[in-house]
Amino acid sequence: MISKQYNPLKNEMFQILDKDGKVVNKEFEPTIDGETLLKMYKTMALVRYADIKALQYQRQGRMLTFAPVQGQEAAQIGPMAALKKQDWLSPAFRELAAMLYHGVTLEQAYLYWYGNELGSKFDDGVNVLPVNVPIGSQIGHAAGLAYAAKLQKKDQVAITYIGDGGTSHGEFHEAMNFAAVYDAPMIAIVQNNQYAISTPRAKQTRSETIAQKAIAYGIPGILVDGNDVLAMYAVVKEARERAIKGEGPTLIEAFTYRLGPHTTSDDPTIYRKDEEVEAWKLKDPLIRFKAYLINKKLWSEKKETALQAVLKKTVNDTFKTVEASTPPTLDDVFDYTYATLPNELKKQKQAYQAYLKESEAK
Image (cartoon, rainbow, N blue to C red; front, side, top):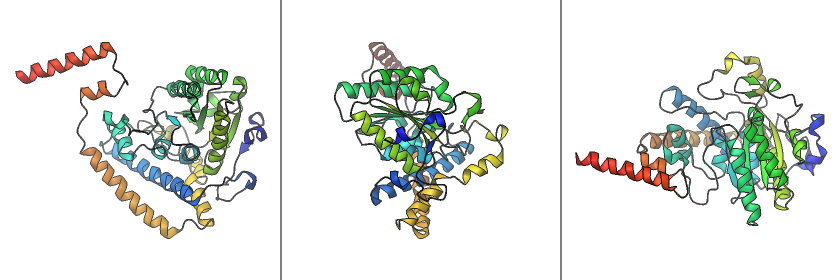
């Protein structure tokens, strides 16, 4: 068991690929077929390009506030590739990569940040909750989904993501404790990107690692190189196997870095130095994974050039479709908030529709 060999109290970090894409931990290198490896890489590349373009669209006044994911792609794609289609994803607001890999379309993701309610309405069979902006709320949702799966004896787990700063919120502790007590099949991934908005990781918790917080809940916790997509895959695959056996949740700290701003409302140059960012760029998850695939004869620079051309067209065409979309109506707010509309909201919707008819009659 990987988590038993890497003690978070000793700051031991699990890694398979180094920054140059070389396998440094052959014992735990997962067996993944070529098709899946390429899907993982292509999704990471799509997310990177879509992320860069979203930032540009927002700066041009064509998109609302956006939360960039650049630098954290491996921390999301590795885990999602290790799960099954029926598993649930309960995201926060920076999980573009995880959402796309699990079935959300780029158009739907862009619609959300464009301000269209339909951006939270996913296709049937896509087990992804809408974006959760209130910090920590997604952890409770995941714990509930996981407990429900246990009660219904389903081959299903719930995975959720939170930032390092989010672990200081009460909802994080409440949900982790609940999941631990009831052995809920939940996997919680803390994306330690070094900053809680502008607050450095060292100033928002005294814990040597965030993974060690798992000890207080009585569950496994492990510190992982979050820029290593294979390491993230391996620990989540193991965590899922544990969860399905009824052995409860796992807490995973993905040690990574947010290369861009917290959101498009943030200016990271105020609180961190360019030298720090440049040093982390050398650990870019896409660079190391690409090198790994080239070494395995699954990828080449020629294929990379062709892929980038496809991504450029895909992303640009998708956003054109989003810009041409029909603006959301107030009906959408009612229709996509609850599975079954509460009576009070039914009355409000009826009153609103009556008001519309009256206005049209005039």
